Image (cartoon, rainbow, N blue to C red; front, top):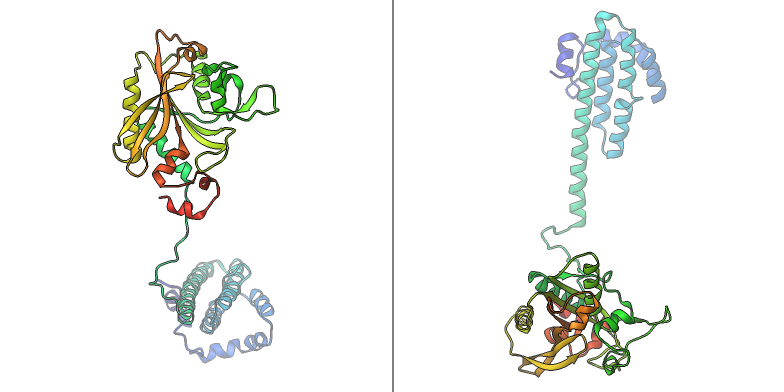
Length: 396
């Protein structure tokens, strides 16, 4: 039962907020309130509230407030005016709150009915204010849609999304292939770019005066004696196995180490002073060259999407014996080298504290740029470092 329904039962002068007549139906009531109404008519809103707060609470006062609220709400045309209405009637210092404060001064037998009427009025005004707010918001939205004439059925404007650099994509593809084979991918914390001569050359069976060092001429720094920029990610072999042995762990080892390497090269379409390499290493009892060939054949098929004619050419690397370079046949280019590999040299195993009579292994090194050029059809290695948006867009 709403406030107004309760009021009709409890007081003969009760009026519905939106159906009440403009004039009270009882002439005696109009006469009784005339003097007070005349006084309030010329007062400001704050003065009227103060007068209302000073006047004794009665059913007539509640009905008067309901009538004024009805008239005020009917004239509201904006959300700003509705907020002012809420503050004036329902706020902490509003007229309804002032009436409620008068409950303490009425007789005990009248306090209950008057309190119910005030609560019902508060609920009714709140409900009507919310309904008016929804109507005003709907009208404003309709007006906005009509004036702006937006076709909401049109597709939204697409947002350009970035993607990984081609070299990063190729590195991730290679890593995922070998991860599926059970390899552990290392990061640069285990094989740093700024390296010592020992881990980059000496422990990998490069003698100090061996001509093989000329093939990997790199950049030395002034950080300390024999500190250089690594020329290969093969330093990961030594650092990883050395750490495992020091921790009391023994093979099997199966790792993949991607990263940047540096060479003192003449820059051209196929060579650069900086490029990316991925080192693979497997060490366990009874590892054979056939294991290496099977692993690389599986990788080539997975990376290029099909099996390709492959050949192993005898080569030389100080840290593998025997050593080979792997070529893949292309209809357009013929035979092209894609990586170097071989069986881990016994001296490398000895350098990390492993017995070469008990363990054997294989290693391989992939040039990321070279594989990217073949897979993406990039004619010049330097294009990968020029941030040409055409190259980036050409990559899937």
